[in-house]
Amino acid sequence: MRVAAYQARLLPPGSVEEALEHIRARVAWCETDCVEILCCPEAILGGLADYAPRPAEIAIDVELGQLDALLAPLASDTVTTILGFTETASTGHFYNSAAVFHRGSVTGIYRKLHPAMRQSIAERTSVSLSEGNVHLFGTQGQAQRTAPTVVGVLAPALIGR
Image (tube, rainbow, N blue to C red; front, side):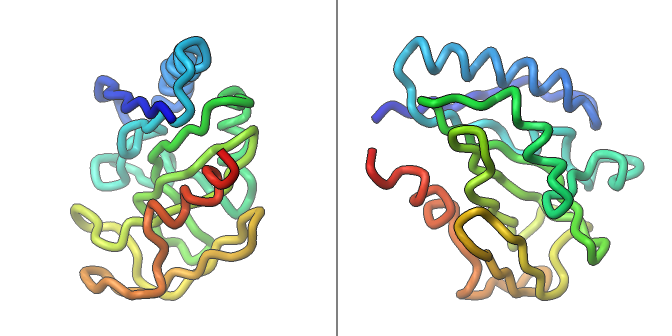
């Protein structure tokens, strides 16, 4: 199995379309070079809430299907892409999240338990995914055993390879 780490230049907050163009080019390169997993930078889609003047403008609502719609151009039969973004939930909280995008759909979401700065996880939440529910519990600065790891979120995409 071949894995590629994509180190992108820092884009201005909200530059989702530009980021998608760059990532799509990397996915195409991975397809040509037989790379199966592409790891993208933290918050590549739109930036971090902590650095945005109005975080709600860059945040992506996974529960409403915004992430699936945005990532559709990245669909690949051979490349699984892991990419970061600022997520908003119905609770009004922002999360520094990473998504696993495999064969045209989001198969996992990981929410950081220890955010860098001010905005983040505060209360119990649940995100519905194609394989079931991921339940996250915690308060800022306090890790909980029930939270998934990046490996735990990625593992289902790798089964059978």
